[in-house]
Length: 408
Image (cartoon, rainbow, N blue to C red; front, side):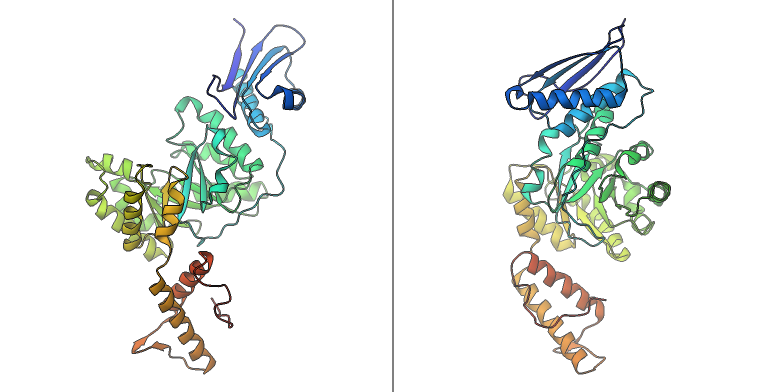
């Protein structure tokens, strides 16, 4: 029986994807058969790309069939490489797509992370327009949303998306699989514009140490200057009790996230909108994050149709001290952003604090007070962050104050 390898999806309802099969033919030459819904417009481009990929792969004596449903070039490249690796498990060469040199986005340890939009890693139809919805972060997911049989193919799709896709101003995040499997995925991701690695089902500082050490050693070996941040997701009773150790295990940890679906299953209860069953866990994670000086990020809200309940959930998370929330549908993003926006009274108070600080500095006073209350530097820094958020949300103009405050 001739060996074969295939990857991708096919069917009448498939869009922005393709299905590629590679079958041994016992001959010296290759054959290529292309069926595409967009053949009149892009047929020659697809044919040219396929011949280029075949040449780079150095493969001979195979029949290659591609059923295309409007896949972008980076998707075709990923599906071909996946099929090739399944055809020949010894094949190791990466067939990288053309790099997009105009990728936008920015990252920082304390960057705003109000919303993080999850995209299933094996569904390329969601990738190209995801940034247009304006999330603070886009999570290309390799874990729960991808079936075990498709994780190898999803990894190559996610890698190619990091190389080729413009997610606009969103942070570029990837949720890898639970360790140790996740470590085998990092070499495909670290060289390619990744801002944050989400570490699922994190239960101890050992998990953080493992991934941060791997990142450091890989980046040094491969001459990569920038390290991605790490966002542990705590999803078990053990993880909750170890939250502070997790938060302080590495300087790469930018925030702690809570995952309540697995947590409630772990403690043997059901998740509710009221959240009484998870109040202890969320409080522990919140306090661990704040004690470590990093962000606390709330869990996803799974009912994508109930915007009212979503808003209540975000306001409740904000009241506890959480600074962001996961989302699984673009329609959740504006609701999350609106609910996390600072209140006008908070902004007014923050501006008074900053004004008092500036006045004291101008007068050479080491004592800063607002009314009868003393103000220390952490309070001023929190006020500055709130003002920056208010400016970003368009609540106040960027030049609200002519004098600039030293943020150090």
